[in-house]
Length: 91
Image (cartoon, rainbow, N blue to C red):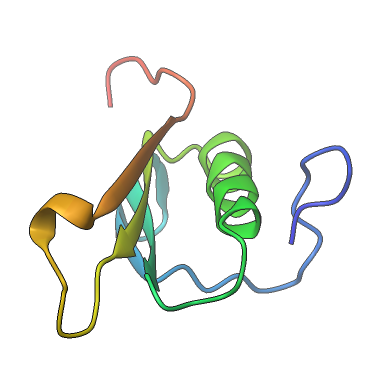
């Protein structure tokens, strides 16, 4: 969880999905957090974590998805939030 300054304070962070090249921070492409629509937990925690991952670990993009679930689930109800990391030149 990021602290009040947006700095990640946990020793290990486990995003739901990452797309990167191991050992090469210039190729940290995408970090994704996914939550079901039935979750009562606020999205703010995941948003803050994605922003911090983008800036502290140079992920180019972050994506938050809140998936519509249950018998009334619809693709149109999927919530998407994009987060941008720092621009990296010549990856």
